[in-house]
Amino acid sequence: MIARGSVFWHNKAPMGEFFRGKLMRLGAPGAIAATAHKLARVIYVLVKAGVDYRQEILFPSYQDMRLVRERKVKKMAHSLGFRLVPLQPEVGVS
Figure 1: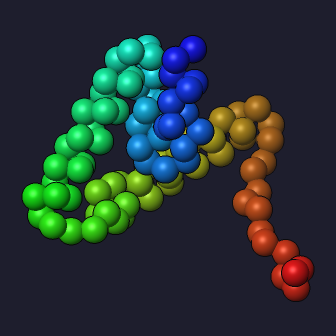
Figure 2: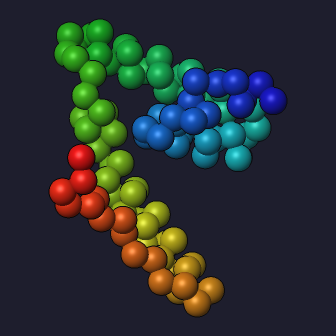
């Protein structure tokens, strides 16, 4: 239950996905330790290089990971007889 109280539990960013992936494999204590270690490495690089945090620099494969996941979900839906259609924002709605 401690993992559900984590900041990363509901986080949709790459670090949240990393945490949830580790949670499935390692359990709560291992996931928390692995995520803390990764976060410490990110902070170290930022401080050492003296740069601002930019997600696309630290997690360049995030978009690729999203595309792979999207293909996987579409394939699963197709095997179950469903078709996935991306949501389109409504035009002219305020």
